[in-house]
Image 1 (cartoon, one colour):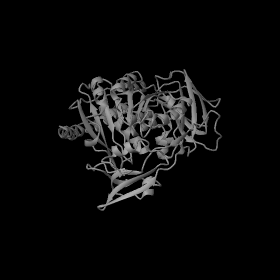
Image 2 (cartoon, one colour; image 1 turned 45 degrees about the horizontal axis):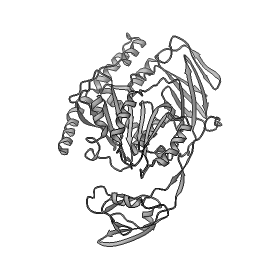
Image 3 (cartoon, helix red, strand yellow; image 1 turned 135 degrees about the horizontal axis):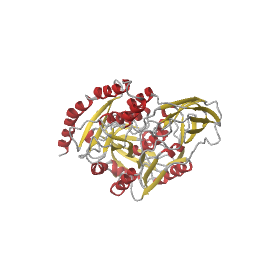
Amino acid sequence: MKKSIELFVVLLVIMFASHIFAQNDSWLNEINKFANDQNISDDSLYTILSQWNAYPAPDSTGVFITFYNQINDTLKAPYVLYIPSEYDQHTKTPLLVYLHGGVSTRDFHSIEESFLQDNYFVLFAEKHKWLMLFPFGNIDTSWWDLVGVKNIQTQIRILKTYFNIDDDRIFVTGFSDGGSGSFFMAMSTPDDFASFYPLNGFLSVGSIVTKKPTFLPNLKNRRMNAINTDIDRLYPALKMRMLIDLALQAGANLLYKEYWGVGHDFDYANDEIPIMIKSMTLQPREIFQPDIYWETWTPDYGKCDWLEILEIDTTIARADWHQEYQAQIPNDRISFGFYPDDDFDYDGIIVYNLVEGETTASQMGLQQQDLIIKMDGIPIHSLDEMDSLKTFKQRGDSVSITVKRYDEEITLYGQFPDTTYYDAINYSEPSGAVQAEYFGNEFVLETSRVKKLAIYLHPDMVNFDNPVKVIINNKVVFDKNITIDRELMIDNFLRNRDRSALWAKRLEFEI
């Protein structure tokens, strides 16, 4: 049965993707025809684009469709779209983005081994007539890597060309690394999304892995509902509470929930998903929010809705309100430091590779292709059995593992390291920040270590018939009437495919 489903998916790739992407040129030609028609006024062009509803009917519904995003000459990332049975191309349709776990692998997960047919959310997407996007990531396109983030953005924008996706109802969830990626994107690139739902993730993984800062106050700009479990061997709730408390101190718009008696598993799916779906329906994107706090260390992550930080000046003194939020996290995880061979289906555990650095495995002399058959003299047949035995261990305890190496049985001895502590957030790069708010047509901004910024204006946000006034650091820097910037509006629509965030004017300021 499983094989027949996979074949069906592959056939749909061939038939459907080639058909739908063939329409790209006609779509561009249609947009450019309106853009270049000088008989269409700027106001009328805005109305045409904001009400765009010309989407093709799909050849099939109730199916998974596989696409590929060509990132560079050698890297092509797969992604899968689920189209519900009752999808209607004339109706704006929410999109749920699901980020998978285990994103730091060398190869992309294969569709055969993934969550497509068994993913808990698919039944709810089908019931509520939502589209679902499954990006695939690997070590080169992880959820906290700029290439990986842009990969997801590109996938969404490509799909917006051909499917009537509701721009204000794109939601992000994911489990394990997918949860950690949800946190990262909320703090770094929230523009495309309405709200975030990280499951059994860890808030600071993106900062820890990239060794670059992430900023907890940025979580005020989107709603987030996070869940962790108490006996999770990777990200237990006890550790997560420290970061959640820190995020709330920073002003995060965050609801945190725990399930007890649950490990690193989505065992609570049937209880929680209906609650999540209901929350999503009540949390559309609000791009015209009247106040924004945004902080970044790089212009690559400089934009949040109508505010963009373009350049940072680290020679400027940090403002009093521009704070660093930090916590010391105990590193008490019991880990040997090796990667198992997931394709090995027999008794024991094959060592596929070793984690770099000083680990218990390297101290013991464990080698690639060792077959682990015992821990502390107790026979083990699988990684799950080893994990069960590890629950009885603490940092500083001695340990032995028995392996078969070239038909010889060898016992290796070692010791887990003592508990250490590490910074939750890596503040390796200086940042700039802006506090911004608007009322009517007046914008008031305070900056910290920011040299250049921009604000974006929209006809639904301000009255283009009245002057726009901008005050930065108590100084009036702009007080004029504005008009629609036709070229900006077209460029924005072509790049982002966003009918709601159809910015019609951009004002840039050097501090």
